[in-house]
Structure formats: C-alpha cells, structure tokens
Length: 462
Image (cartoon, rainbow, N blue to C red):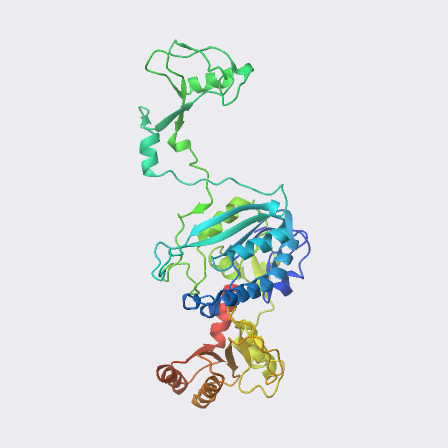
C-alpha cells in the first residue's frame, strides 16, 4: 500500500455516514472505479423491502415504490459520477425489481453512449418461490464509463473439458495439446503473398488473401515447431495453438461461474445481500490498474487485504483509520439522550422524529421502499406520508427490561404494526422472554438489537 497513491484524496481513511453527505466532501474526478450494490434502505433491514411476499402489489403500488427508490438513488449517483475520473468505470448492481428504471436514470447521468454492458450474474441455481412464472435466478450489473478512454484489461474464462476434447485434439511427443488454426489472412494483404518452403522440404503457396504473418515470423514458427504440416498433398499449412498458452475465451457478459455466498462460507459477514469476493475481484481486475483508487469497505481491508486499523500505521501508509464512527459502547453512553436516539435511528436506516417530546413511544421509523405515499399526519409533527412503516424504540439505560417491552408492545398494537425494532445496550432475560411470547401470541415481531451489534455492523458495512 503506497504512502499516498493520490494527490487529491487520502485513501488511508474510511469515512462513515450517509454516502451522499460523504461524497460531497470529495473532490471532482478522484476515483478510478466505483462498484455499488445499493441496499433498499439498509442491509440489516433487508427483509422490509421488496420481499417475495410483497410481489402481488398493484402496478400503481409498485410504480410508486420504484419511483421512491429512484428518487433516493439519483442524487447519490450524480455525486458518484462527479467523483469518477474520466478514465474511470462505474458498476451498479441491482435485481429485477427496478433494473429497467435504474438503466434510464444512469443513461441520463452518465450518457447512454457511455453504457458499456449489462452484465447478468447467475446468483443461484434454484428458486422455490417462482409460482406461475419463471424463477428469477440472476442479478443485473450495469457497467458505465465516464469517457471513451477508460481503463480496460481483457479478462478470459476457462475452456470447458468438452471444448478442450473437441478442439485441442493434437498432441506433441512431449504431451502438449494443441489445435491447428488457419494461417490465412482475414483480409487481402498483397505484401504477405510469398511462397514458403518449410523445414519438411515442401513449398506452400499462400491463400489469395495472403499469409497472416510475414516471412520472418513464419520462419520463427517453423523453427519452434509450431507449424502443422498437412498429411495430404495440397493441404493447407496451419499453425499450432497450444492449450497451455491459450488464455481461454474472452469473458462475456453472462457470469454463471461465480456462486453466491452461503452461510457457511469463510467470507460470510452474515447479511443477506453480501456479494462474493470473486465477483468484486473480476470487476477490479477488468477496470483498474495497480495503485488505482477503488471505493472499498473497511471490513474488506481488514480481512481480505490484511491491513490494520491503526493511527500510526496509517501515517506511514501501511494501515487505515475510520472517521465519523463511534468506536465504543462507552462513548455512546455519554451521548445526550436525544443525540443517542438519533444515532441509533440513523444507524438502522430509519427516519428521526422532528419533535424531541411527545413522540407517542416512537423514536423513529423505518420506511420500506415499497411503502405508498398515502397521508400526512399531524400527530408526530412530521410528514407521515407513507402508510407502511416500522417503529423504532431506543433506550439508553444499561438494560432494557420487561416494562420497556410491554410499553412498546402497546405502541405496536395501537399503531397496527406487525414489525418493530428496539435498540438497547443489553436486554434482560424477562425482556427477551416477553418478546418471544408477544410474537407467538400476537403474531407481531419485535427485533431486539444491541448497540454492540449495530457497531459491529457499521464497521462491516463501512
């Protein structure tokens, strides 16, 4: 890791927070590659977004949901395009719910002429919830560049065993496998018309288009034993292409060779939308060179790059630091109560209450993208413009007890909510028992989240 590979941005610092706010702090044209896999609000609350149980919504519902998502992503993509170098590349990972609308948005931001590929990643081999339709087993990755002169390293895939058996059917005495390819020039080249007398004593005449190489190279091929002499009179002189020197077929835009991450995978971080390292490695290899700047998560830097989060190592270019993220639970115990509530709500991807008092037992709300704009409410003093939402309750006390849970249950019943989130430093056994009882009796689920769990997830997603 060089001390400072960029003159305009310090790559040894990971900034945490809303990416829209953090991107606005970066200078123009400072990043070589951007890959985003935008969660539908937040990774840890993925279940509240476009799940299979919500696929029977009307067209109007779905349209409004997608519109809300695009409106959320548009200003972020504008900032991403601004910080991308003219030689840079941008990859947007999404699925079928909004991919068509995402493509239109990106065409407007990047210019449709700079759209390079729609990559199809086969993320699973089976789908048990297809119903009366074809199962959706793929994700889509849109590949754009910020100019015509962009970084590109051609990648190749591996030959299949069947292809090798069919095509590489020649073998040298030393066991090297090869296939013969034509020495005919694809176009007419008058300067490459020459008779060639090979090492076997036979003179071969060129095709009317000419040879594919000049006389010197032909002699080198012959000297290296790379020419394949025909066994029949009048046969064509051909070139041996060895299997161990062949890069393989050029990589296409259908990626069916990278499996998804399962719960037992070594690299698994435990959240449902995590993408496998080989997928990211392929994109980085194709669109960057050494010392290029890529937007990377802190967890990846630690676990996969072997770098340490250390102030002293950061100063000499062998580590990194994280800014704008509380490091310990002790720090958070000292936050003013309302500031602590705001931290917890934002960390969950929720919306804070405008009022500091009279919150009716609700400290924040999570609005899934599938929520429909429906009404405005004066009760909380904020724009209650979506009817589908999930309440958040936050307690800064040492332990959340049974009475705290009882009060939150009353809120969920009053507001007719089926899912809610409760944040605390620790939960008593009685509190957890009551959460389980409430779920079994009422069919309503309270998700208890500790501050430690949130901090760990913040670092994982940094």
